[in-house]
Length: 55
Ligand SMILES: [Zn+2]
Ligand SMILES: [Zn+2]
Image 1: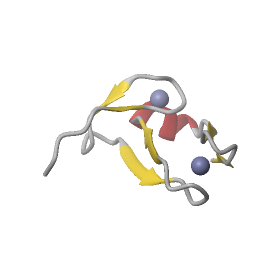
Image 2 (image 1 turned 180 degrees about the vertical axis):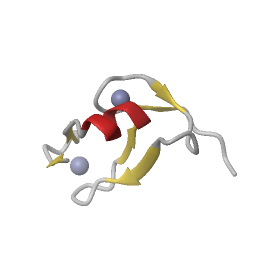
Image 3 (image 1 turned 90 degrees about the vertical axis):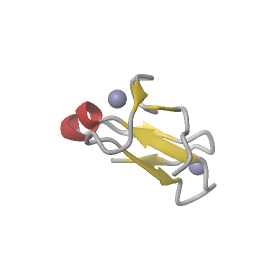
């Protein structure tokens, strides 16, 4: 597995995949979006650089 530096798109925290954090491509522009466990739990919305908002 390749190591990637990922930050949570909502809070900017560095995240490690596999500790409750996730990454996925934006449905609209395929930007890789990272979300930390805390923001997932809180249900924080994210905004991709293309303007896509998601829960
Ligand atoms: Zn976060
Ligand atoms: Zn996007």
